Length: 246
Image (cartoon, rainbow, N blue to C red; front, side, top):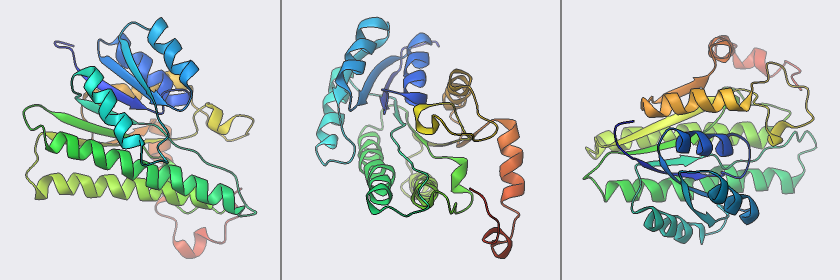
């Protein structure tokens, strides 16, 4: 990269967020990391050159907005806000605590922090800003085995599409929105599962960072999943709801 850019990675203590933070730092970005586990955040700052600051944050609390601004201040401003904070459950029993915590994190928490990042970039038109968020191919159809998760990813994807349109409505040509749609990635989120076509998290992060640096609006990882989603979308609702997909 020709110049140093600054990024915040939310949800950097595990999985895709952790790998993306490390890779951005390796590629010359100045990175601030955020999440709930301080011991991992401090270790990242101590061990990885380029990861220079952290904030302990829980996206489900209103105080997360204060933490975001503190981290922006530590970095002296940001060019990229990367949101990788999410949870999900296989929940055919519709256990209320799991459904509501998924919605609280993936919908409310995402909108809270992404909305604040959007407002920050809107108020700083002097340089380019980008918001990149992990949604999922699970956004494509409602999944009976994980109702809240698939619905929350649909919410996320539509929210990002709305923000993309909002930049045009407001003439905010310096703000770019990226919707990142991985398939099943080998992370703690699906640990112990037997999902097919599981992707290596390091390779997935590399594809994501490449797409983010090109400011792609939609990043689907990888070509097999792009093909899967293409055919998935063609299944009529009346057929889909009769399919036993667990």
